[in-house]
Structure formats: C-alpha cells, structure tokens
Length: 178
Image: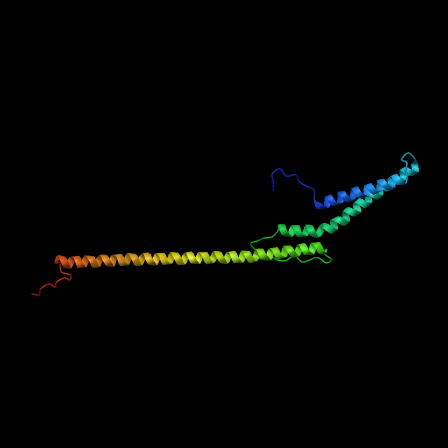
C-alpha cells in the first residue's frame, strides 16, 4: 500500500451516496415540475413530506444495500482470517446467495486449493532437496575416509618397501632360546 494513499470510502458508502443523490435529484425535479412554492403553508407541508420521504427512502436503501453487501463483508472477513499453517475449511454458502458473490466465493476456494497444492509441492521439493544434500554429504564423507585410508595404506607399503631395500628386516627375528 502506498504511504500517502487517500483512504477511499467503502463500496457500500459510495453506492448509497450515489443512490441518495439520484433520489434527491428526482425529488427536486418533481418539486420544480409541480411548481411547489415554499412560501405557502400547504406547499411547505408538501415539501416537508418530500424531505421526510427522501430521508426514509435513503434509510431504506441503506438497509437494503447493507444486507446485499453482507455476503461480501463475510467473504472479506474469511479471506483476512485464513491461516495458511492449518488445513483450510470451506465457508458454507448462505441460502439465497447472489450469483456474483457465489462465483467470487468459488473462485476464492479454487485459489486456496491451488495454494494448498503449491504448498504441498514446494514442501515435497524441499524435502527432496534436503535428502539429496544429505546423500551428497554422506558420499563425500565416505569418499574422504576411503581416500585417507588408501593414503595411509600406500604410505605403509612405501615404508615397508623402503625398509626392505635398506636392508632392514621386514619381520622381527625371534629371540634365541637358551
């Protein structure tokens, strides 16, 4: 997220604001078309009734929109609460779910399945790499020990050959008996 990003209002708030503007514009157009005069008492009552009707319509609209946006809020909460270290559980679809929200939920479930498959594949690849590294280290240690022993054997053979050439006995003579 950008550090100086302006926080935008929620989608519900924006839709409700647009609807309120549309309702107010419609009421204003109706008021102008029927020639209501705010100076007369009867027209003031009608104008007050129109304002109350606009407010009631905006409140009812807000209530309906909040209920229609509730599944999106639940889905967002589910997305934010995903624990990738644990096995995932699918969120049950509420009865009467809107088609778009159902598609969004299904796409989200498929995404989580792909993440789980990728996580399993990655864990398997990591284990295989670790096993390969262990096998390589074991081979290196085994080869190193064999090389060291072969070097010692060759040195002993060279020393024994040198001792024979120098005239040293290769075996120790047994002490004479008395």
